[in-house]
Image (cartoon, rainbow, N blue to C red):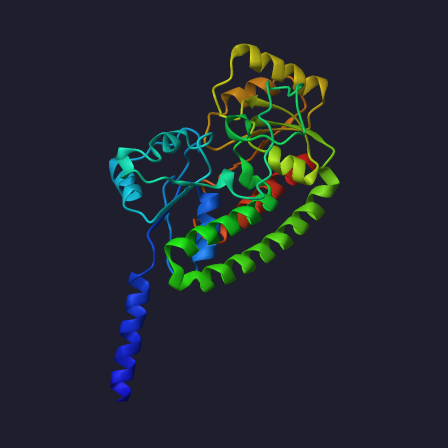
Length: 300
């Protein structure tokens, strides 16, 4: 009888594992949030791996096929993963509509900033193609996305809904603490001016009161024109920017050009955590790395 019960329990465990939904996620930060909600049930698949731009990532025929056969595909939205936005709902993915987390309830959005100097700006929320798509860099938005992820998983996998919901609550509590820790760490350098490679950090800046004064490239990481490089070079000097930050996904040439003849130091920021180990801890590590790289450079 005991042997029978052990066999039955093992069989039930195998069925549970097989019943886990197939979930595909575009970039490391939201893959981390999804992995946290799915902990104990299954492991999501990550599409964009290694040092690749979130805007310009390309996907293999096998990855596209995997998306078409997945139960859920999570992306940020059409304005970030442009190629994924184009194939969402198309014949290429069997008509599957991807879950776009920039549309999740309670997501706070900001308008795309115009020009490298951001002279024309607005505090009004924006939506669709007018919204800056880097929403995950505000931990308040990560909380909203966590709720939306759990809700989507509950719909496709009701037997595991209690697990998803419990994991989501645990993740939101951890995000609360992460936000508090970052706010303390950032305080000594929050008023120091700096320039970033591409305009990806608005959500982090606004949440924690940072003093970014420009970007070499725009929100989409389009290569900067000669005029824009000249404008930012002048901005570095006129604002006495303490640091200019490059990114591992792009050439350093533009950063070197705009800092020439200035006292600005070079730092590194990565909005997607390209070199992080994917998994449930990657989101928190990403924001900690951004915080440390900002404070190390600006506070040096």
